[in-house]
Length: 93
Image 1 (tube, rainbow, N blue to C red):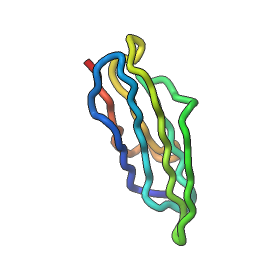
Image 2: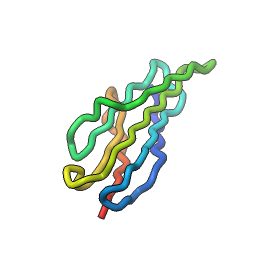
Image 3: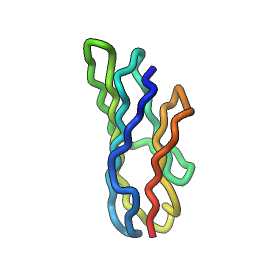
């Protein structure tokens, strides 16, 4: 399982904006599984892409959401199998 996780996207955005976040793992074997939560609620509509390499797999997951009143504080991405990674948050004003 990969021990590295990268999140790409804005760290802050105003309410009403649409933001896209991308999460990518380092090469892992077995394949990494990623999950997203928005204010503690799981996101089911994430796009996922798994690329095979000579050493294993690289998993990428993307979400696009509009920040509204229901999205009050943060968006998190983490490994499903290992919840030890720090999460990336998007804060909006």
